[in-house]
Image (cartoon, rainbow, N blue to C red; front, side, top):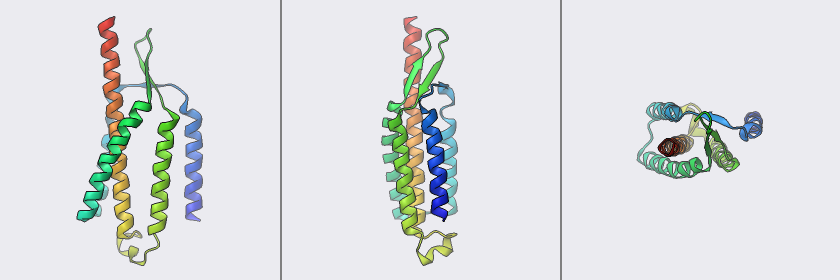
Length: 168
């Protein structure tokens, strides 16, 4: 029943997100660092509460790097425009970027369901060591993904502003 409720909530949230995806939203490049910083702090807290072993750290580092590489590509998929009249920047999220996130959520959901049945999980608050490792890797992957998405967007937005300011 827990999986049905979680799955239903995810489907509803994603349906609402897809509906609003094509809308153009304002973009402030100076605030793009706030979300990744908060996520990185949450990841740090999760890792400090349940420190991974050497394998967990290695896989977490790998997840961070892979997330960063995919995040850079995801950032390139997000369209950034500048209004010539006001000079304000806006962004339009690509459906490909959203499908990427849906895939990540599904992989994490399946992995967690697969490893959650381990009887040794009670010692770690209901999650076995494999689930904790997968959760840590997924969390660090998300830090890399979102962090590099925002860095790519910030750099591109600043180049757009600089190019148009130099031309005008």
